[in-house]
Length: 259
Image (cartoon, rainbow, N blue to C red; front, side):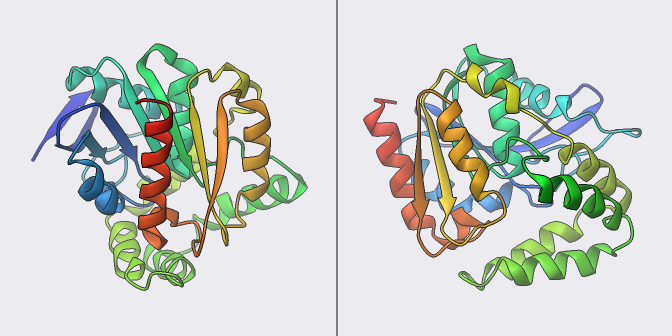
Protein backbone atom coordinates (compact mmCIF):
# COMPACT_ATOMS: atom_id res chain seq x y z
CA UNK A 1 0.00 0.00 0.00
CA UNK A 2 1.77 3.21 -1.15
CA UNK A 3 1.86 5.80 1.65
CA UNK A 4 4.03 8.65 2.82
CA UNK A 5 4.39 9.88 6.38
CA UNK A 6 5.14 13.55 6.98
CA UNK A 7 3.95 16.35 9.28
CA UNK A 8 2.55 13.74 11.67
CA UNK A 9 0.18 12.27 9.06
CA UNK A 10 0.19 9.21 6.81
CA UNK A 11 -1.17 9.84 3.31
CA UNK A 12 -2.37 7.13 0.94
CA UNK A 13 -1.83 7.60 -2.80
CA UNK A 14 -1.81 5.74 -6.12
CA UNK A 15 0.46 6.54 -9.06
CA UNK A 16 -0.21 5.28 -12.59
CA UNK A 17 0.97 6.08 -16.12
CA UNK A 18 3.80 8.16 -17.55
CA UNK A 19 4.05 11.67 -18.93
CA UNK A 20 3.16 15.06 -17.50
CA UNK A 21 1.69 14.60 -14.01
CA UNK A 22 -1.95 15.26 -13.14
CA UNK A 23 -2.77 15.21 -9.43
CA UNK A 24 -6.45 14.50 -8.70
CA UNK A 25 -7.87 15.62 -5.32
CA UNK A 26 -11.28 14.35 -4.22
CA UNK A 27 -14.24 16.10 -2.62
CA UNK A 28 -15.04 16.23 1.11
CA UNK A 29 -16.13 12.87 2.60
CA UNK A 30 -14.97 11.00 -0.53
CA UNK A 31 -11.62 9.43 -1.43
CA UNK A 32 -9.23 8.64 -4.28
CA UNK A 33 -11.66 6.19 -5.88
CA UNK A 34 -13.72 9.16 -7.09
CA UNK A 35 -11.27 9.58 -9.96
CA UNK A 36 -11.42 6.08 -11.46
CA UNK A 37 -12.95 7.28 -14.78
CA UNK A 38 -10.27 9.94 -15.17
CA UNK A 39 -7.34 7.69 -14.23
CA UNK A 40 -8.52 5.06 -16.69
CA UNK A 41 -8.73 7.68 -19.46
CA UNK A 42 -5.66 9.84 -18.82
CA UNK A 43 -3.10 7.32 -17.55
CA UNK A 44 -2.45 6.24 -21.14
CA UNK A 45 -0.70 9.57 -21.84
CA UNK A 46 -0.16 11.21 -18.43
CA UNK A 47 1.19 10.34 -15.03
CA UNK A 48 -1.95 10.23 -12.90
CA UNK A 49 -1.77 10.54 -9.13
CA UNK A 50 -4.75 10.16 -6.79
CA UNK A 51 -4.61 10.43 -3.02
CA UNK A 52 -6.70 10.49 0.13
CA UNK A 53 -6.76 13.88 1.86
CA UNK A 54 -5.93 13.66 5.57
CA UNK A 55 -8.90 12.28 7.51
CA UNK A 56 -10.35 10.57 4.44
CA UNK A 57 -10.12 7.07 3.01
CA UNK A 58 -6.88 5.37 4.05
CA UNK A 59 -5.09 8.54 5.20
CA UNK A 60 -4.72 9.33 8.88
CA UNK A 61 -5.62 12.44 10.87
CA UNK A 62 -3.58 13.74 13.81
CA UNK A 63 -5.40 14.59 17.03
CA UNK A 64 -6.45 18.16 17.68
CA UNK A 65 -7.94 20.93 15.57
CA UNK A 66 -7.54 20.53 11.82
CA UNK A 67 -5.75 23.39 10.05
CA UNK A 68 -6.87 23.71 6.43
CA UNK A 69 -3.42 25.08 5.53
CA UNK A 70 -2.13 21.55 6.01
CA UNK A 71 -4.17 20.31 3.02
CA UNK A 72 -2.05 22.17 0.46
CA UNK A 73 1.12 21.40 2.43
CA UNK A 74 0.24 17.70 2.18
CA UNK A 75 -0.19 18.04 -1.58
CA UNK A 76 3.25 19.62 -1.91
CA UNK A 77 4.71 16.87 0.29
CA UNK A 78 3.22 14.32 -2.11
CA UNK A 79 4.78 16.13 -5.10
CA UNK A 80 8.15 16.17 -3.35
CA UNK A 81 7.89 12.47 -2.52
CA UNK A 82 7.17 11.62 -6.16
CA UNK A 83 9.90 14.02 -7.33
CA UNK A 84 7.39 16.08 -9.32
CA UNK A 85 8.60 19.65 -9.78
CA UNK A 86 5.46 20.97 -11.47
CA UNK A 87 2.03 19.40 -11.94
CA UNK A 88 -1.45 19.87 -13.33
CA UNK A 89 -3.84 19.98 -10.38
CA UNK A 90 -7.41 18.74 -10.77
CA UNK A 91 -9.90 18.77 -7.93
CA UNK A 92 -13.61 18.68 -7.20
CA UNK A 93 -15.30 20.76 -4.48
CA UNK A 94 -12.98 20.57 -1.44
CA UNK A 95 -10.33 19.02 -3.66
CA UNK A 96 -10.67 21.93 -6.06
CA UNK A 97 -10.25 24.43 -3.25
CA UNK A 98 -7.15 22.58 -2.02
CA UNK A 99 -5.77 22.68 -5.57
CA UNK A 100 -6.63 26.38 -5.85
CA UNK A 101 -4.89 27.24 -2.59
CA UNK A 102 -1.86 25.21 -3.65
CA UNK A 103 -1.63 27.29 -6.85
CA UNK A 104 -1.90 30.47 -4.77
CA UNK A 105 0.66 29.48 -2.14
CA UNK A 106 3.05 27.48 -4.35
CA UNK A 107 2.64 28.93 -7.87
CA UNK A 108 5.98 27.56 -9.04
CA UNK A 109 4.70 24.00 -8.51
CA UNK A 110 1.49 24.29 -10.55
CA UNK A 111 1.38 24.19 -14.34
CA UNK A 112 -2.41 24.34 -14.73
CA UNK A 113 -5.61 24.11 -12.69
CA UNK A 114 -8.78 22.14 -13.37
CA UNK A 115 -11.43 23.11 -10.82
CA UNK A 116 -14.68 21.13 -10.87
CA UNK A 117 -17.62 22.43 -8.82
CA UNK A 118 -15.13 24.32 -6.71
CA UNK A 119 -15.92 26.98 -4.08
CA UNK A 120 -13.40 29.70 -3.24
CA UNK A 121 -15.26 30.88 -0.14
CA UNK A 122 -17.85 29.71 2.37
CA UNK A 123 -19.42 33.15 2.78
CA UNK A 124 -20.15 34.21 -0.79
CA UNK A 125 -23.68 35.52 -0.09
CA UNK A 126 -26.20 35.87 2.72
CA UNK A 127 -27.40 32.28 2.22
CA UNK A 128 -23.94 30.80 2.74
CA UNK A 129 -23.24 33.09 5.68
CA UNK A 130 -26.42 31.76 7.31
CA UNK A 131 -26.39 28.13 6.16
CA UNK A 132 -22.72 27.13 6.56
CA UNK A 133 -22.56 27.69 10.36
CA UNK A 134 -25.85 25.80 10.76
CA UNK A 135 -24.50 22.97 8.60
CA UNK A 136 -21.26 22.92 10.60
CA UNK A 137 -23.27 22.48 13.81
CA UNK A 138 -25.71 19.90 12.42
CA UNK A 139 -22.80 17.76 11.22
CA UNK A 140 -22.06 17.03 14.88
CA UNK A 141 -25.59 15.71 15.43
CA UNK A 142 -26.33 13.59 12.34
CA UNK A 143 -25.00 9.98 12.41
CA UNK A 144 -22.45 9.22 9.67
CA UNK A 145 -24.58 6.50 8.07
CA UNK A 146 -27.56 8.82 7.85
CA UNK A 147 -25.51 11.69 6.44
CA UNK A 148 -23.88 9.38 3.91
CA UNK A 149 -27.25 7.99 2.85
CA UNK A 150 -28.70 11.50 2.35
CA UNK A 151 -25.72 12.67 0.30
CA UNK A 152 -25.63 9.49 -1.76
CA UNK A 153 -29.31 9.79 -2.66
CA UNK A 154 -28.97 13.45 -3.64
CA UNK A 155 -25.88 12.90 -5.81
CA UNK A 156 -26.84 9.69 -7.62
CA UNK A 157 -29.73 10.99 -9.75
CA UNK A 158 -27.68 11.09 -12.95
CA UNK A 159 -25.48 8.07 -12.19
CA UNK A 160 -27.10 5.50 -9.86
CA UNK A 161 -23.70 3.87 -9.32
CA UNK A 162 -22.62 6.91 -7.31
CA UNK A 163 -24.83 5.80 -4.43
CA UNK A 164 -22.80 2.81 -3.27
CA UNK A 165 -19.49 4.62 -3.71
CA UNK A 166 -20.53 7.72 -1.76
CA UNK A 167 -21.97 5.71 1.13
CA UNK A 168 -18.87 3.52 1.27
CA UNK A 169 -16.50 6.50 1.24
CA UNK A 170 -18.51 8.38 3.88
CA UNK A 171 -18.61 5.39 6.19
CA UNK A 172 -14.82 4.98 6.10
CA UNK A 173 -14.48 8.20 8.11
CA UNK A 174 -14.73 8.26 11.89
CA UNK A 175 -17.35 10.66 13.25
CA UNK A 176 -14.87 12.72 15.29
CA UNK A 177 -12.51 12.97 12.33
CA UNK A 178 -15.30 14.10 10.04
CA UNK A 179 -16.54 16.88 12.30
CA UNK A 180 -12.98 18.20 12.68
CA UNK A 181 -12.24 18.00 8.95
CA UNK A 182 -15.55 19.56 7.94
CA UNK A 183 -15.04 22.40 10.39
CA UNK A 184 -11.72 23.20 8.66
CA UNK A 185 -13.09 22.77 5.13
CA UNK A 186 -15.99 25.16 5.75
CA UNK A 187 -13.59 27.85 6.92
CA UNK A 188 -11.37 27.82 3.82
CA UNK A 189 -11.30 31.25 2.16
CA UNK A 190 -9.50 32.35 -1.00
CA UNK A 191 -11.54 35.27 -2.33
CA UNK A 192 -8.87 37.92 -1.92
CA UNK A 193 -6.21 35.67 -3.45
CA UNK A 194 -7.88 34.67 -6.74
CA UNK A 195 -5.97 37.37 -8.63
CA UNK A 196 -2.73 35.62 -7.64
CA UNK A 197 -3.53 32.61 -9.86
CA UNK A 198 -1.46 32.99 -13.01
CA UNK A 199 -1.60 29.52 -14.57
CA UNK A 200 -4.19 28.40 -17.17
CA UNK A 201 -7.38 27.43 -15.33
CA UNK A 202 -10.37 25.37 -16.44
CA UNK A 203 -13.60 25.73 -14.46
CA UNK A 204 -16.08 22.90 -14.90
CA UNK A 205 -19.63 23.18 -13.59
CA UNK A 206 -22.41 20.58 -13.68
CA UNK A 207 -25.55 22.07 -15.22
CA UNK A 208 -27.64 20.86 -12.25
CA UNK A 209 -25.08 21.73 -9.56
CA UNK A 210 -26.63 24.74 -7.84
CA UNK A 211 -24.42 24.45 -4.75
CA UNK A 212 -21.68 26.84 -5.91
CA UNK A 213 -22.86 28.00 -9.34
CA UNK A 214 -22.59 31.73 -8.59
CA UNK A 215 -19.03 31.35 -7.40
CA UNK A 216 -17.91 29.98 -10.76
CA UNK A 217 -18.75 33.23 -12.54
CA UNK A 218 -16.87 35.24 -9.91
CA UNK A 219 -13.83 33.00 -10.32
CA UNK A 220 -14.01 33.42 -14.08
CA UNK A 221 -13.83 37.18 -13.66
CA UNK A 222 -11.00 37.21 -11.12
CA UNK A 223 -8.70 34.46 -12.44
CA UNK A 224 -7.00 35.97 -15.47
CA UNK A 225 -6.32 32.91 -17.63
CA UNK A 226 -9.54 31.02 -16.92
CA UNK A 227 -12.44 29.57 -18.88
CA UNK A 228 -15.76 28.10 -17.78
CA UNK A 229 -17.42 25.04 -19.31
CA UNK A 230 -20.81 23.64 -18.31
CA UNK A 231 -21.12 19.86 -18.13
CA UNK A 232 -24.50 18.51 -19.21
CA UNK A 233 -26.52 16.06 -17.12
CA UNK A 234 -24.38 16.48 -14.01
CA UNK A 235 -24.79 17.52 -10.39
CA UNK A 236 -22.03 18.08 -7.80
CA UNK A 237 -20.51 14.65 -8.49
CA UNK A 238 -19.74 16.05 -11.92
CA UNK A 239 -16.82 13.83 -12.94
CA UNK A 240 -18.83 10.72 -12.05
CA UNK A 241 -22.17 11.89 -13.45
CA UNK A 242 -20.78 12.63 -16.92
CA UNK A 243 -17.18 11.36 -17.06
CA UNK A 244 -17.08 11.28 -20.85
CA UNK A 245 -17.77 15.00 -21.25
CA UNK A 246 -15.51 15.91 -18.32
CA UNK A 247 -12.64 13.94 -19.84
CA UNK A 248 -13.15 15.56 -23.25
CA UNK A 249 -13.17 19.07 -21.77
CA UNK A 250 -10.01 18.38 -19.75
CA UNK A 251 -8.24 16.87 -22.75
CA UNK A 252 -9.18 19.83 -24.96
CA UNK A 253 -8.04 22.30 -22.30
CA UNK A 254 -4.66 20.61 -21.94
CA UNK A 255 -4.24 20.36 -25.70
CA UNK A 256 -5.16 24.00 -26.33
CA UNK A 257 -2.63 25.11 -23.71
CA UNK A 258 -0.01 22.69 -25.09
CA UNK A 259 0.28 20.87 -21.78
